[in-house]
Image 1 (cartoon, rainbow, N blue to C red):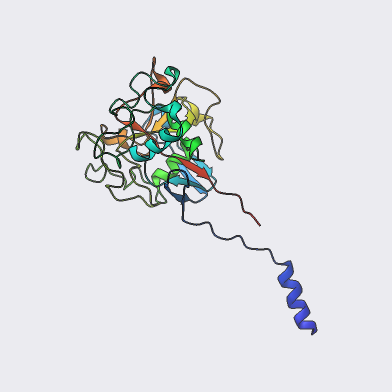
Image 2: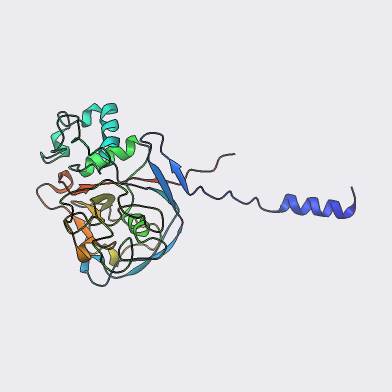
Length: 273
């Protein structure tokens, strides 16, 4: 081996191994959902227009994956088939307010609504589904980062409210098929409208004033978990990517309504040799 070749080989061996780029999407084996990559990065979280969403603060979140669509009735039925303790007639009363899957006929969702987001699900049910699917509920910071897209929009589609671009303002009188509207910049659908979505964080009105800068996970405890994303019943700022909602006594996380659903997130899989 020549001296120059030896030097080149030494340099190659010493060079760091570049990590493979993460796939832009992955498929969940459990429920068949497509999850889109949300790259690591900073964004401005919150709004000065609401007390419980201020102050605006810079947040960094690690890369993660987020369901492209809200969890559908069809997917939720698969969960029930494998977890009979969460069926309508068997669920523990501690985990719902009496309206769990109120529009289902036993274990069957309404005809023609298989691709609509599942509704009338409590936080407990949403969390159980996420665990079954090998996923989790997103943190509030992850949810807002994903909803705002790379552009940092106030709504998933832009900075001005437009009821023609999402299922909001009661225009359809209920939910619509997931993906009926254009995706945002991260490839996610219905981050504005259709249904409010449960997230992992406990709610606290003043949390933004004390939130850590990196990967905040919300208060350690609380009475209700947070809901994000507006819903088919909302309009204007209540449908924005910064609107924070929570449930009230006596139901709290047991609440089940026709405008509450969820989607799941997943950590970036660890690299393997």
